[in-house]
Image 1 (cartoon, rainbow, N blue to C red):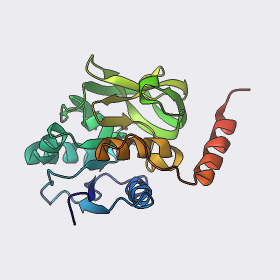
Image 2 (image 1 turned 120 degrees about the horizontal axis):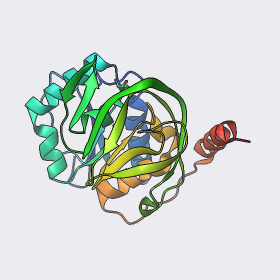
Image 3 (image 1 turned 135 degrees about the vertical axis):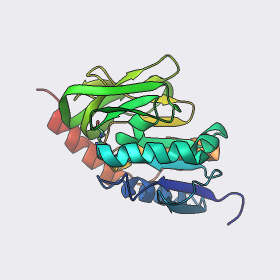
Length: 237
Ligand code: GLN
């Protein structure tokens, strides 16, 4: 490894990997390597200490029990807090997104989150399951979000977090906004390997992590086809 090596950590695959979240790690590593950026990936299980000097941290979705365990363990470990305070980039999905906030509900109990995003989550009246679409905050300069959501919680943003997107289909945080971002942290209800449908978010994380203004374009004809299919399937007539 040398100093220009991009280090990507996948947080607690033993707890939060219910929905194929490994895909985000593979996609980021692939898109970095395709630009000639040396990359190393680390899968950090919940019985391991969290490294503090990686460039990108990924945390996935999961059921209530593993979600609350992961939150407790990360609070006790403290390493993720240090990494974020040192400027690491983060992609937090669903359960991982909720636990980045101040609090969330799991198995009917209010649980402490990491407090790294100014959000709180509570219980929704019904489970939000289905396609999710939204127009991403124009400041991020990205094409629309497409994904699949499956969560019981609803999320409320404080003044230090901005919505990732305005919902155009599905529920997201509350039927109006979807996800949140602040600094180099992105949280979303778009499930599992969300970067497969949203390669522009992968490239944003890579730009944040490397400081590059732009990255060489890649052949994204397959993800573009997938995006086109999903938008066509979910756009109201
Ligand atoms: N347990 C959380 C909820 O239902 C998160 C679920 C998930 O990660 N899909 O709200």
